[in-house]
Length: 278
Image (cartoon, helix red, strand yellow):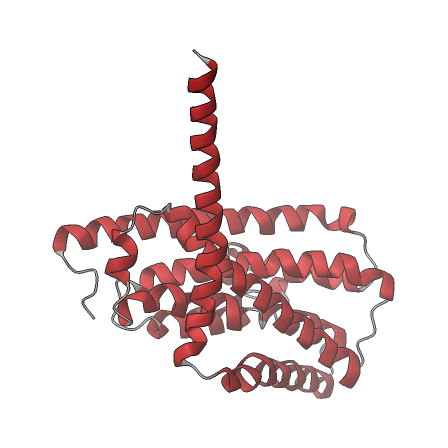
C-alpha cells in the first residue's frame, strides 16, 4: 500500500473522528439550549434547585422526628437521588420530546452516528445532575446535622458523578420508550418516584420485601447511594469498589438498552411511517 493511500485513509479516519466528536459535544450543547428555548430559564431554580432542596429537608426532618435514622442517612440518599430531576426528566424530555417538537424525522434523516447523537444529548444532563446533587449536599451541610470530613469530598464526588451518569443512562431508556408512548411523562414520573421507593433512598434496602430488594438491586442509584453513605462516614473508595463496580455495570446495561431501543424504534418508525405520530 502506497504512502499516499495510507495518508488518505488516515485523514479519512481523523475526519470521521472529528465529525463524531462535533456531533457528540455540539449536538448535546445545542439540544440542552433548545430545552430552555421553550422552557424559560427562570424555571431552573424552582425545578432543579428548590424542589430537590425541599425533598432533602422533608425526608431528613421526617426521619429525625421518627427517630429512625440520623440526618446523614437521609441527606446522602436524597441528595444523590435528586440527580434524577435532570437524569430522568431532563433526558426524557430531550430525547422523547424530539417527536413532540416534530424534529425527530429530520434528526434521523441525517447520516450522523446514532451513538454520538443520543449520548451527546445525555452529557449536559450528567453535568446538571451532578450540580443538583451537589446543591442537595450543600443544603444538608448548611441546614442539617450532616458534616462529612473535608477529605471525603473528592471521593464522594466520584461516587455521585458515577451515580448521576447511571441515572442518566436510565433516563435515556425512559426517553427511548417515550418515542413510542403518547406522552413521555407517563413513564418519566413513575420512573423518578419509584426510585425513591426501590433504591434505598429513605428506607434501607435490607428492610424492603425480598422482591423489592431484587428490583432495587437492578435499578440505578441503589449501589451508588450505599457507596456514598459509606464514603460520607469515612470509608475509602477501595473499600466500596464492589458497590461502585455494580453501579457502573448497571449504567452500562442501561446505556446499551437505550441504544438498542432507539435503533429498534427508529427502524420500526421508518417501516410504519410513524416517527412523528403523537
